Length: 271
Image 1: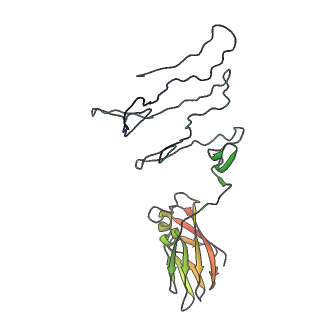
Image 2: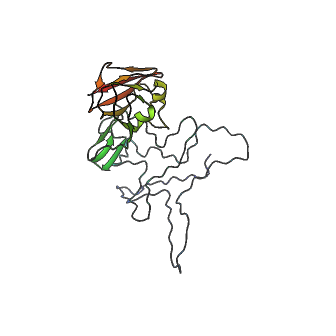
Image 3: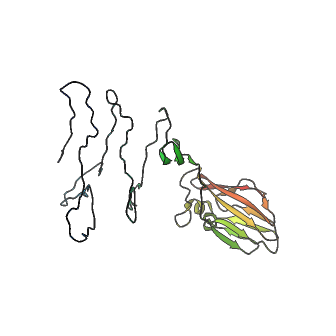
């Protein structure tokens, strides 16, 4: 059922090869002319797809799509040079400018702000599911397998240091997610006991969650005290290199890897 259906046809009965600069199915615009004073308009929308509505009648809908753009290419006799499902031109004015603005959609079984199907491995040519930069000169891009490449800047991470002034420390998941622990070891040789695997996997305040096996998180551990520190695993945590220590005035990188839904392995790198 279609409330409105409009498909333009381009034909030629006179022979030859006609040339058209543009064929537009629907063209929408707004033009203010001959207005005295300054008009005030809260919202201008070229196209609005209204929300679904019902008079409480039960309706079963499998797929609800506000806007569907079908394949804009055609194999065979029509061969476009550049094919775009959607294109947004440069926004030349405006206090705040958004190419695409996506509202909160949390809830439900799945919530994806943007979902891109995996690109076909057999396809030829360069494949970037995400590309930032001028065409042919990417600054940041994602390859077909999901790997990121940053070519003109560096990844930056906000960390929250934790200061520990004690002989021993329980390395909590909050400290791990914070990213930096500065332990001023005192008195005698100290023991750093990790949080449980369950807590490390769950993350802290929604951050650092290890949602799948193999996912990892790192934490820098700095010993600026006068004693040697040894690591011990909490429940469900295995220390891969047992016996490795952090001597006074040294540091190490700790990598926590989810090995199963209930276990974590900690790797001690350096020191």
